[in-house]
Image (cartoon, rainbow, N blue to C red; front, side):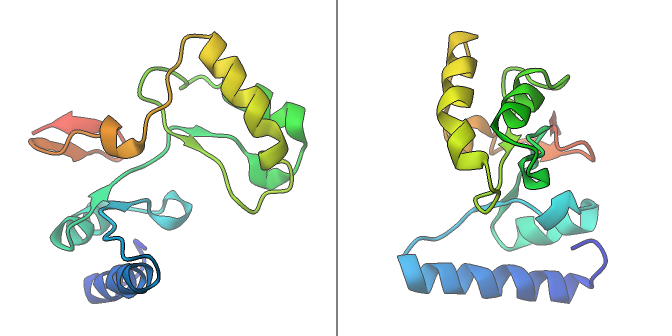
Length: 137
């Protein structure tokens, strides 16, 4: 997204927004930049379109198809895993669905609670920095 013009960014966002709304009746308000490719311009255009930009801080690397155990180990031993972490998993990865039950149980046993991202983000008086962290304005 960072490589296209602001107008193209807006067109991409709104095209997907409209299609999801047509199919589901749901107005989206969260935006995860594809491939984690974003800069301040992406964040600002998304905000102008009514979106809160989010970013993961723990990549499961599930897309590499190394297997169930690899996904679990990658997430549970990730250096950034902590309160407020957002874990990136892909719905089309080969082993993700098989890993989820064990991954969720393991993280719950370690004291983590799962909440929707909409409950995790600050909505007013914050912005996202280049590392995907919310920073008070």
